[in-house]
Image (cartoon, rainbow, N blue to C red; front, top):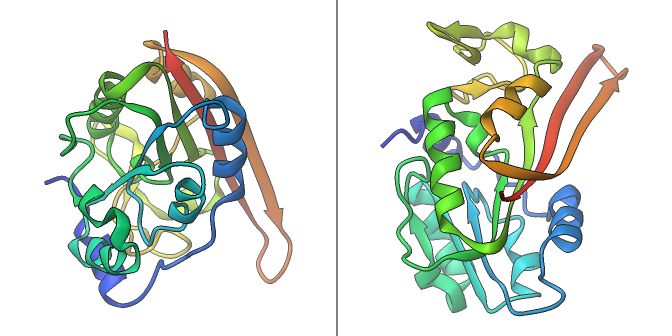
Length: 221
């Protein structure tokens, strides 16, 4: 399994447990999917502590999620018993444990914590798992403009992926892949780009730094 053990360590230590729905996930799902028009099957990959699950469950009875961490999936099954059988431990860059296709697949800052080869496999797997009019909603593909990327070491033959961060946001979180516009356009050639947004924030409190990420919505071409 390519899933980073650093994330299992984070969850076992009670870290990375955000539990509020991410606003950009909500807005993109509501705008670009058919969730308001029909019952939709929704899958979140790398769901973490399940911040988005209450939002999905308020609109659908067919909500599924995967994460590589058994610790976090056990917690979610206890918190959401009505969908416990739809919550599975899996490496979403290798295979999904579901045979059905989905109207909405959501990736919020999940695939970005992988190397290039794994991200390519994820995109191919997601495309094959979408219904014909389904959408892949990607929130927070970290940007090359993110100032904390400077603290990581680039992988050999994979300059967009860094690891061994000495400090900053990504310290202790394993691999992180950073994207620029040309890179995204190349990776998503097999999709129709419905939405592409670059969000940059400069923080002036304490030590000045820039956070930057891409929000993307992809449909089948």
